[in-house]
Amino acid sequence: MRSMIIHMSGSSKRRGNVDRLLRDLPAAEVVEAVDGRDPEQIAGVQRSDGTLFSPHYPFALRPAEIGVFQSHRRCWQRILDAGWDFGLIAEDDLRVDPARLTRALRLIERHADREMYVRLPVKARETPARVIAEDGDIRLILPRIIGLQCICQVVGRHAAERLLAATDRIDRPVDTFLQMHWITGQPIHALLPNGNAEVAHEIGGSTIQTRTGARGKLAREAKRTLYRARLHLHPQRA
Image 1 (spheres, rainbow, N blue to C red):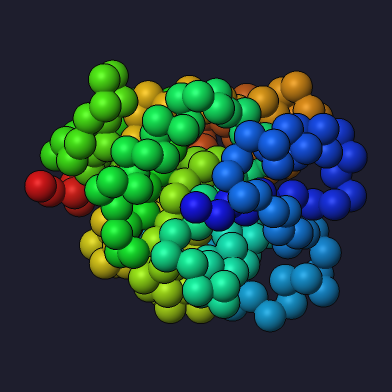
Image 2 (cartoon, rainbow, N blue to C red):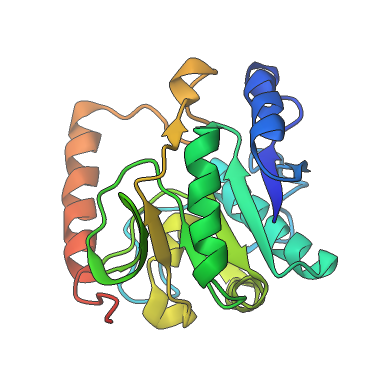
């Protein structure tokens, strides 16, 4: 399996972790991240804030979220251009347990095909609609409700092609879009627990989150709660 690490070359604080990932991930290479704060890099992005699909997403896309979405699209395209059956896509604030990752990838390789998209999330919160396979305490599942974050995933060639075709225009962050399996036609699997961790707090903090006042936080949380309730009306089914 080949791996891609999404990293902005100007982010010097994250370079040490990228070097670690280059050692720990199989056949890894760095993919230059799209800088959503650079108007030239996102000039061709077609967007409709929150209104393309139902349920409508209650927040406008932030520049950093546009950059992250386009960075993942760049990796999906890399899988197609290289002719790989699968590609592991990691963000540069990921830390892995190499031994546990090896077990996880062996389980995926035994059961995955080019149609599959398998998340390896840092938080084991998803509940299964179906258990596909197990290796000791590690389970490959089809979750009822797809979790957030795209810090680590294995993407099959046909899944990458399908997702690229569905994202010529974007209206919400990439992880939120991937939850909409009834729109994309792309089932999303998960493998957990997997030993992965997020270490953004150790290497300069999040590149997406922004500061919001107390009143703004309350308003955002209310909108987010309502959106999640609507999302739960569309579980993945075994």
